[in-house]
Amino acid sequence: MALQMRIAPKLTQVVRMTPQLQQAIKLLQLSRLELLDTIHQEMEANPVLEEGGLEDLESETEYSPDEKPVSQAEAEYERDNTTQVEVSENTRENDIDWEAYFQEYNTPFQAAAPTEREEREVISFENVISSQQGLMEHLQWQLAVMDLTDEEKLIAVNILGNIKPNGYLEADLAQIALELGCQEEDMERILGVVQSMDPPGIGARDLRECLLIQAAQQGWEETVAWRIIDQGLEVLGNKNYKALARLVGASLDEVIEASEMITSLDPKPGRNFSSENPQYISPDVYIIKVDDDYQIVLNEDGLPKLKVSAFYRRAISEVTTLEDREARKFIENKLNSARWLISSIHRRQRTIYRVTESIARRQRTFLDHGIAHLKPMVLRDVAEDVEVHESTISRVTTNKYVHTPQGVYELKFFFNSAIQRFHGEALASESVKDRIRQIITAEDSTKPLSDDRIKKILEAENIDIARRTVAKYREVMGILPSSKRKKTPPRKT
Image (tube, rainbow, N blue to C red; front, side):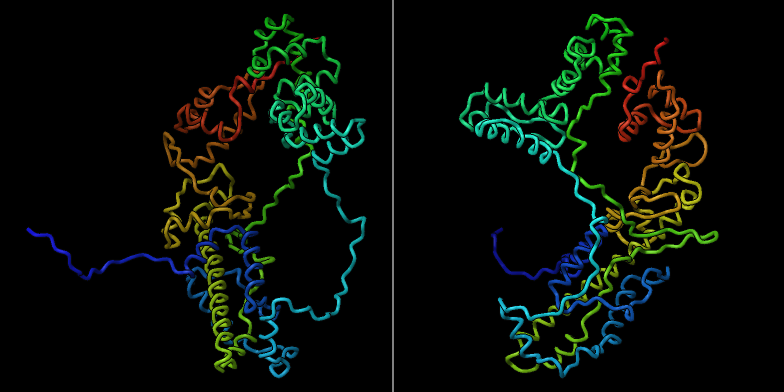
């Protein structure tokens, strides 16, 4: 059979993402603060977008369960494009020279016109909070008042520049000496100067050196505590006091007393100067109990109520000449972009509402009684309720928080695997984790419970769980094993 080349038509179906769909997906997975930043950026870049006044606002936080996201968005656009077409009395059509406006808009470096200053209330200095001094500022201030030569200060500055926020020096002194063209002995000497600074232990290269610096400043050079830090930190970490007593040549009581002294030292001397501010969670949605029912309310405080500018909608009908076609095209593109953005925001809010509604219905016992009554739930369960794909549920629940009568939780918190019981319905894995935490909290710290013992306690409570699962959950919660949770009993006097 001879090979031939020929052109033949072929019909195939290809999934393509339109710009509108890409924007909707992007907004769907943004957190609330990221959404605010995106809206403000769009308002700065698109002059067609406006923030509605109080007279334009309607209640958009409560939706009917029967409504669909698309119809909600389309209704909003219809309202924007029909009812909000009037221009305020301060911006009359006859007061604006359209052609002059576009000439000014296209001038890149137009001098700003003088404007009246808005009178604002001046904040009292007593109400202003000063920023916390960082670790580097604290160290540089001490270096500035030290009696060092310029060459020594240069070496010290390079050492400070390699100190991490936790207070440790993570750099090779030989490499720094080579770059500066100085002797390694000088580097060690200046490092000793840096390590004499506050906070105690700063500039250490490992935990042992950090604790030894602090012990030296406490005057512990000839004590059992010094020998433990110098020789037996790893044994101390395992809390094997008998082996530690043999290692440092001391009695058991002396080792226990020295261990209590060592625990008073700071293993991370730089953390008290951390400049990181605490992160506050702003819930995206609220689940509020009203009588015997729960209502879903979206948190739209601070979210601008966007609308399409009536001025630009009227202006586009006036731009009809050949010379103004570029201006008309520009306005049309900005109008379409504005409508897509408003549509995507309404789709996002509506989807969050419906997902939270489904979660509240399925987790009613959790809302009533707490985490011990959390039910197993997977993405497919909510996806079937909302009639969207599981990937959409995953995007909606990422970085979104809900305020419930039991506290504030990430929406992803409610999706967890099932732990079987010997008899009865399965438990959510988060409920089992919480029970493990309660058991460990209530244990005798001098005789901590092993993972196998915790497993048997859970089995007695009708929970079928393996020891390795207990160990995995304990590690996920950041709880140490029993050998490292053990505390020494108080010494008899």
